[in-house]
Length: 366
Image 1 (tube, rainbow, N blue to C red):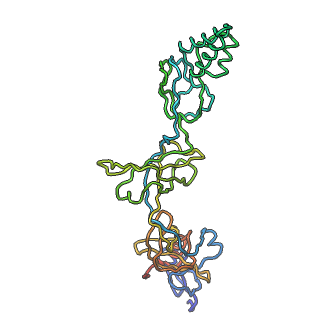
Image 2 (image 1 turned 60 degrees about the vertical axis):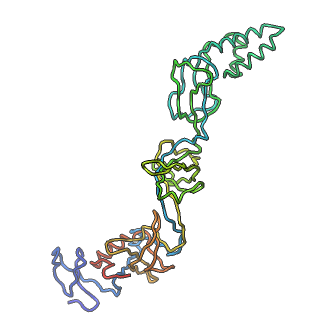
Image 3 (image 1 turned 45 degrees about the vertical axis):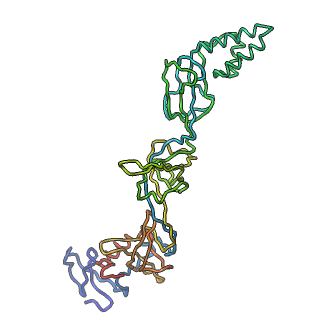
């Protein structure tokens, strides 16, 4: 028979409590004797080792800046202000193309294509003839050389002609600028005219994210509104950007407005075509708040675990207010300065149920 400070229970079914030895009516194991404790309903005590193993951490309830959070989805596109076209400098036929894939990065001075051009050949011949003339040779030679430069030939190519005294029938053309290839407009064998667009280059240092903003959210967005962006296919957690354009026309019948955000991309992890989650913070206010992981919610309401000064954990019911993806506003139930369990709250709940055989919120009211 147990005394006033002892009772018998089952190690497998701790909800079984008897005042004498016996067999568990649930699993039929022998009951064991344990010491009673003086803790109230909703309280539990853990050893330092248990706290460490459960990865239980705390934070002091204090004021945070809370905001209403609006989430949009968008698609990454090229910043059209940072695109440049490479165009043909002379009429001719593309004999060989050395850049064939959209998305390739080309550097300044890289070989782009080889071209056959009668205009180029004639001007080269004119330049060679001028080198043999003594009277008008210098004037004609200078004019011919300038013409070759305008056609896209380099100084080194012209020097090669001057030294070899031979015309380059097929002229290689090199990139005068670098960037990512966003479009290719030609294939081998094409004839091109002066000014024909051949390649479109884009910089990835800055990109656009275009999002559909439905009318109820339009009041929260204007030019300059800042936002955070998460892109799953990158290693960085968040990128930052701001609104640079809002379409003045409502798209029908979907009833949304196109908003364009500018995002800096120094690590160049973001690529055109990726999908982005956009988070806007609006209606900010200062209030008591806790991380979402600190809150336990079920059909009975919301509660948290408070660590008292004596090291005992006590479950308290709370009333919640505004919530975003990270924080929850606390309206009542606990006060500023109390130490709250922020990670491991659900493990504490499970331990309480296991030891006491009841829900810590049973019978609580706020």
